[in-house]
Length: 115
Ligand SMILES: [Zn+2]
Figure 1 (tube, rainbow, N blue to C red):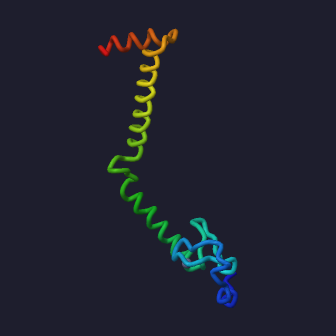
Figure 2 (tube, rainbow, N blue to C red):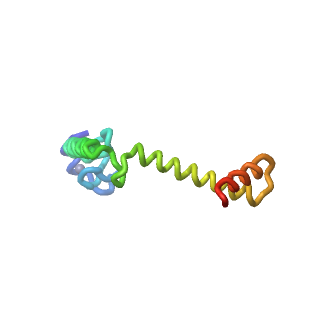
């Protein structure tokens, strides 16, 4: 697939995609597929894999933080927010609709918090 003669005659018409590394058209003749994507040649594939590895090690160096919040903590915060939304939704539903079991429970909780 790295036949240079075939690569020379290939045209944009043959393009099946674009090289993930340099952006030039990829044809069936020069196509090189790697774990990180599709490339126009072995050189671009190697360059992109090196780039991906550098990016990966950079992420590890910063401790995998998101907006300065450690990723694990951010995930817990996200789950707490979702939980809070669900609790509020149950409270609203239990207040508006008379639901056996739920409404008395919501009312006792609201009474406890004075809301
Ligand atoms: Zn390329």
